[in-house]
Amino acid sequence: MITLKEALQLPKEEIIALREDLKKAIEEKKELGAYVEQLQGIQISEYGEGIPIAIKDNIQVMGWNVTSASNILQGYVAPYNATVIDKMLSHGLAPFGRTNMDEFAMGSSTETSFYGKTLNPHNTKCVPGGSSGGSAAAVAAGIAIAALGSDTGGSIRQPAAFCGCVGMKPTYGKVSRYGLGAYSSSLDQIGPITQNVEDAAILFDIIAGHEIKDSTSANLVHEKVSDKLNSDKKQTIAVIENYLEEANDAIKDVMKNAIKALEEAGHKIVYKSLSDSKYDIATYYVIAAAEASANFSRYDGVRYGNRTESSNLKEMYKKTRSEGFGEEVKRRILLGTFVLSSGYYDAYYIKAQKARHFIKSRFEEILSEADLIFTPVTPTTAFEFGSKSDPLEMYLQDIYTISVNLAGLPAISVPIGKASDGMPVGAQFIGKAYGEQNLFDGALSLEKILK
Ligand code: GLN
Image (tube, rainbow, N blue to C red; front, top):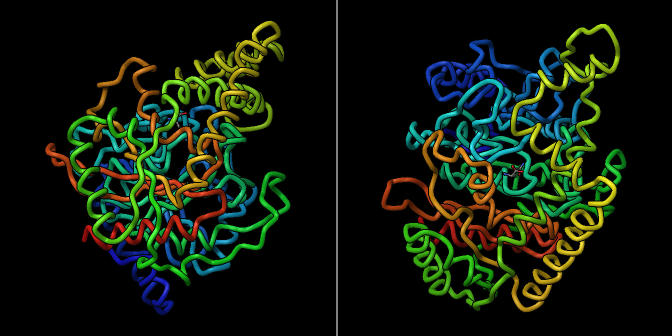
């Protein structure tokens, strides 16, 4: 598949031809279910005429049935564009297709989608990761030039790692969340999923920047990173020893090779440790569920999408929400409501906020002595469908990614090889807040050495 960088050089007629070819390729790979349209057997959604970019089904595109892969949003038509979409359009890019995801971005396998499964292109018995599984599978299968995903606790980086592509989560506040279906507002960020590091930098530059419609948008002038990419820059890279120890042997071996390669390329490797990831998991699931329970009160059958008719208002809310939300979403709403309730607020929610502060300060300590942090993205390679039926086991998928969202830092997942099972392995660089230039430079350096 042509890269985004190459596509940006194409004359208009060739872009039109490219879009037609892509539609055929998507039809041929229908069984992958990377796009919601493939799963529904309908025509690919389009808006504008630029270079086609696949869009996760929780990002507003005017006129599209944007649903966060939920039953409750069937029939909802987005009345406006997310800021990232308007920015893309002004750079000659155009939204093309809705990619499948876990319902409301809750999950790590895309198995909770209302539309059904997305298959991992490297082994169709395995999940593509989640929640942006459709975006990652589409890029990996050569049926998207690039895609947008969203990352609340790893949902861009983990599927990118499972599918062997690049996925990047920006610093919190760097990319406007206006028009992103809110899951956990203090953690959510939109970011690129691409075929290589340079394309990720290009797409990040297009979508980043201050904007008043998102009150948490950082009031900074965006300095483009893609023009200044420098893979020769030598950096101090902190390897997190306790994370590496926890990963399974297949991941460990590939990671160790990558660390050796970074050292041979002239980077300085230092060894550090981070707090036990079990605290990250607990902190994240309290905060994310609390924020989700508040955000999801808007899905009431009145404002958006599906409504179950009833004889009175209260009954209508109840039935609409009972029928509209899937199991995992309900579990999170219940958990979130519980940790925010009086009597439990201090014991859980306030405690989690304190733990979040602690996690952030530990990252800051390490990043005062190193330019970048280097960790695995996932503890294992892509797993088989249905193999994680216990929700807690699924939550453990995020042990290396969620603390980054809690700390608000930028991070990128880069493919570093294959494990003995033949499945892709990804490594993660974590940068300083607003330190995207160093992050992309480090990632590009690694990508080049491993080629
Ligand atoms: N797997 C995590 C969750 O289910 C993260 C998802 C995400 O980043 N959107 O909450």
